[in-house]
Each structure stands twice: as structure tokens, then as C-alpha cells.
Length: 461
Ligand code: UDX
Image (cartoon, rainbow, N blue to C red; front, side, top):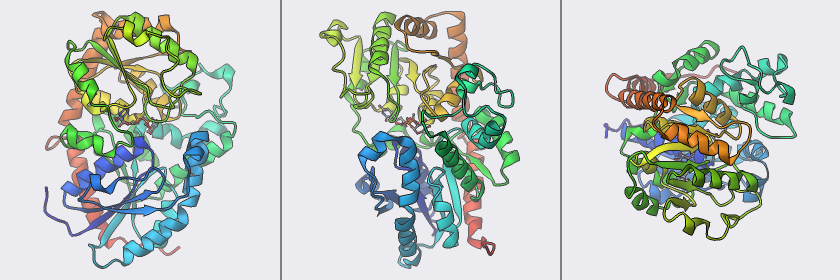
């Protein structure tokens, strides 16, 4: 714990699991470096202050409902950015007048909470953003106006396999789109968060130089603000401090005892994160692909994962019993502990950025099954740039699933090369946080930048 800096930072996460985790980890990192922390959170997916007694919390009433979230992620994010404006203004008004606490150095906002930029400017409050996703996908988001102008977007079914020559190695089908009948709405959302990122005073990234140097330099040429790749966040401290407290669903710890009974690198871990969903047909293909591979598997089936179904009631009678302990299904798992467990041999993931980075940090090779937005770009980078995984493409089919698992788990040239490269990245992810490492140096620059904001003056607008 560094000496108290006498300054307060206001942090505001987007209220979704994949955004809350890295924001709370960032808060911990900054706190242990001497900053006081106030988390501004929404009433939707409201956080539990008792998990973080050393932070202050301020809840703003957004009026969003679980129904609105479930019916359209796109509309949810847009609506949240509209409804939070007034309560956020009121919140800043109160916090900035509070002389009982340390002076506020700046706001650190999730990129997707783009409404915070104009409000912060009105309050003359410096704003830095946290991008919880990778740089590789942000480069594609920033290119949306160009992609539309060139006719890559909206995506035409007949062109899915074509290369986007300006963004190698992406193909049209790897562009970070979402399934929507209102693509213009989606483009507007992307433009908003990219433009409000450009208007900020810097971007913090949960990534590291050795992994994304080329994307970082591409973006630095387009954005005239400082970039701080200081990740992997969760590796700044021991695993137990990084994971469970920001989980919105309780994590089933029993699977760790189950894993303890398995040989090193023998288990396939399967999880598709907190938002993605699959059809009933896909669910059954996955189940049989896993069974037929003959490898033990630990599978997170989140309630709500399977469209139109509660949980795993679709599985044939006796399915679990017939596995005789070879398969273990949970509703939500302690993912960081699992990926770090010696029994894990591969991770079948949707490639949300957190899952991707967490897997990289443990040297676990991936089976990629992206669903939407940044996951599509992440999966392409995992399989074709970093080459630490295999992508399952063109539909779920049990035979293909079985072959892919075997290729990644068995002793064969391609599988061995993938595993070797994954171990190399694991080492790089460790070294970057050591004294003199790239993320460590970048963090020192971030602290200096925050301290320099005291003298920042806003241009008259
Ligand atoms: C969302 C988007 O889907 C993703 O594309 C974007 O990059 C971030 O926001 P999500 O789908 O939840 O995220 O995936 P991911 O980014 O992988 O984050 C999931 C988090 O939940 C990870 O930190 C993971 O460790 C944690 N998790 C996941 C658990 O703690 N237990 C589980 O069982 C599964």
C-alpha cells in the first residue's frame, strides 16, 4: 500500500459483469497506490458496498429494468446513457461540493458510459476512460465510418468470407457487429462512444504491450490522447482478491474440489460469459460434442444461456449420471481460480475480452466461439494473430466440436504449437507487471498523468 495521495477518484462502471469486474479491479489497483475511491454505480445491477469497505459508493437511480436488459442489449445501453444524465449531474453536484472528503482529481468512466463526457465537462471535471475490451476490437470500432463508406457495413451475407483488406486479418464476418434490425442505431452508439473517447483525457486499457503493440500504435496515430495499457488488471494482486467480490451471481466453489481429482491439463472448461445466449439445438450439439470427445469437462450453463429454457432441463434423462463424474455443470463458477488450476487443458469460450485475457494469463489455449461485437474480433486474433486457439466456425455440430477439442487437447503438431505459444504469452503477461515491465511503467505514467490533472484547465466552450 503506497502513501495516501490526498486525492479522490470517481469511477463509474457500465453495470454489466464483463465491465464491472475490470472497473473494480482498477479501483483496487488505484486504491493500493494511495488514491481514495468513490464508485458511482447504477441501481440496475447495483453493487454491494460491504464487499469493498475501503471504497465509498454512490448509487444513481437509472430506472432500468431486467426486462429492458433481456429484450435488447443495444437499446439497454442507449437508454442507460440517456436516463443516467440527470441523476449523474445531481450526483456530481453533491460529490464535488463535499468538502469533508479529499479533492477529486478526475472521473474514470467506462467508455460505454459516454454520457459522462458532457456532464464532466460542464462540471470542469477531467475525464479519463477505461476501455474494458481489447485494443484490437477498438481499432475496428473506430473504423466504422470508413467501413460504412467502403460498403463493408452493413454486412452482406454474400460477402461474409471476404477479407477486410484495411483491417487484416479480419474478414467481413469478423467485424464487431450485433444481431439487430436497427443497424443505424448500433452505428450511432459506436460513433458516440468512440467520439467521447477521443474527447477524454486518456484511455486506460486492460491489456499489455507485448500482446497488442500493433493495435496500440494504430490507435495512437488516430487518437491524440495518452494510452495506458496497464493490464492484466487481475494479476496486480492475488487471485482471491480479484474475483469473487464483484461477481453478480454467486460462484459455485464445489467445482474446485471436482477439479482437484483430475490429472493436469486433462479438463475442458466451457463458459460463454454473462451475456451471450445459444439455441436449444446448439446446446445439445455442445453437450454431445463434449461427451463424445471423451475428455472431462467443466461447463458453466448460466440460467438464461439457452434461449427459451430455464437451465439444463433439455438434457436427456440420465445424461449427467451416465457421465460417471466425467462432466460437471455449474450455474456460475470462480473462473479465475479455474483457469489457474493445473487440471485445465483448454477453455471453450465466447471470447469476451475478460475471458480471453484471463485465459492468456494462465497459458490456457482456447476454442473460440464468438457470439457478437468485440468477441468476433477477439476470436480472430486468438486464432490467427496470436495463434493460441482454434475457432469453431459455421455452426455447432457435435462431430466438429469433438474433432476440435481433440486437436487442442491431444499430442499433435498443431496442438503442441498452440500450447507452446500460449505458454509464451503467459510468461509475457507476468513479466509486463514486474518492475520495469511495460504495464508497470505505463501505470507509473498513468499515476503521473492523474496527478498532473490538478493543473488542467478547460478551454472555454
Ligand atoms: C461482455 C461482452 O460480452 C464482452 O464481449 C465484452 O468484452 C465484455 O463485456 P461477458 O460476456 O460477460 O462480457 O464476458 P467476459 O468479458 O469474458 O467477462 C465475464 C467475466 O465474468 C470474466 O471476468 C469471468 O472471469 C467472469 N465469470 C465468467 C465468472 O466469474 N464466472 C463464470 O462462470 C463465468
